[in-house]
Length: 72
Length: 250
Length: 181
Image 1: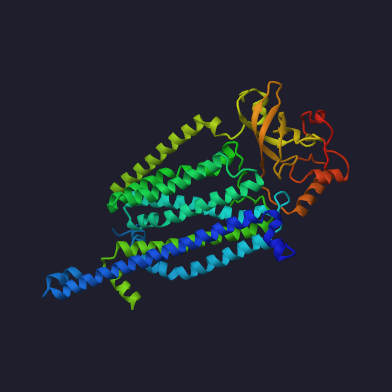
Image 2: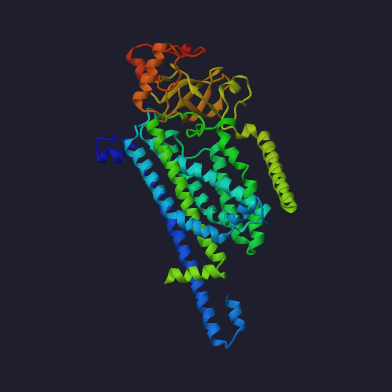
């Protein structure tokens, strides 16, 4: 470590505000990207499941075959 | 079409890609975080200060990686765009869609960290020199691709329009890269070169190298995750996606 | 390759070539506007317009900085090692302003050839090194008798052994005594 103390590390020789602003922005954007991407994933899966349930219900209510071939 | 192009078409199979991504994702994320944390901690706390700039130069450990990856991502998008136009491969379009927001975010970060770094070193947050301006154009290109992609609802025409824009915009990349050599700019020439000896001493350059590689791996991981999502969405009516989703639920 | 694909491949290449040529021509036509600043040679040879706000950029000549004792007025010369231009500036200089380092100044060229700046930005190069390394480099260079304009041939090491460095080709010494901090 090139800094003598934690305070010196945080102060960064007076450049602390600039450096930490950059690193905070970096962290926020990266975490935001990941969070957003997984939220999209959950949405797509939920939507797909809903779709499947609707189709299953439809298949159950209609008596025989034609819908079945549509499903597969 | 069997023969020498077969591997290429197999590469275009969304299902095949989904499995590959699943297999590589943990490894990618793990090594990305390892390298990023190592590079940044080394750069922030252990690398020596610069003789001229003091500690403010430590912004370089995120500024250069984000700028570097932002440009590489655009090149990859242009290549994928060409593949979409020539081979009509769906996976190429999935790639362009999935990575455009990541590229935009990295470009924004490069501009933002550059501006914050510019204040203490140059004395200005922003100047309209060729490097900064061409980088801003890159951000707008990313925005353009995202907007164009969501504006056209037909999947095929949307894919082609986006591919053309990605391809045309790639001329901006050599301009960004060589702007500091072709014109008078306030921005200094490249620090990070693959081919030459770096203009930086080793215990500054190695942490930079680690964070560049780390960000590359992080990008790859996030791109894979987002491409998987896009595939799940596009192939939601196929049997294999239905089964996969049922399994995930169970 | 399938003929249809081959055709599309050529179209893609054609598109790329066309756009590249168009952009190359446009940037060539605007090259003077894309340059952020005029360099000292352009100013000395009259390429740069007078009485218009322009930017001038170059290296701060070694030994040319003269600070006014009672105000914030600073005189110095910038050089590209071919020509040099005298500058006048009143205000606070950026931290990185040092002899031998680059600057970009915004201002006007007066009739007497002095560039009157109202804003000074520091331009640094792509070399990063630790202070000790920079100092060692400077010492080695001094020993080898290399002309000092590389980084870290800085003023404080110069004032320590009490002698100013010879300035580059141009007649910077005429501007005044060597300034030491």
